[in-house]
Image (cartoon, rainbow, N blue to C red; front, side, top):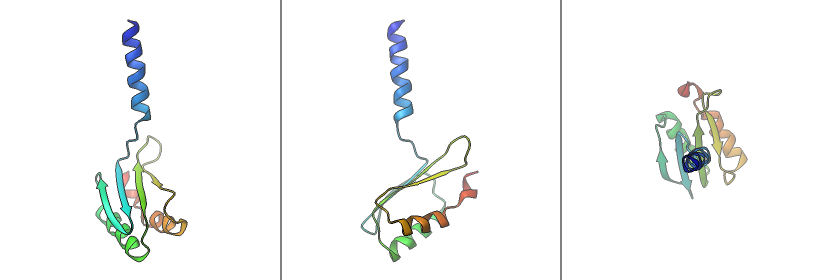
Length: 96
């Protein structure tokens, strides 16, 4: 019985600590390195266009939670002006 409780607690903590974004886009030195998830075509196109004009390195993650349709998380490597441009083109209505 104790083993079952210990294993279930470990599984619960592992489940809570694993980073699980629904969308992951990585840029490095002005190039799209990888993309994961079902990305709206317009959002990906706009991110690539922003990256052409002002090249940056970093990651863009989108999380889904119970209260908000989608939460956009940008890495700190991305300049604040570029972050704002990405937030402006983010399609919040696509994730409802």
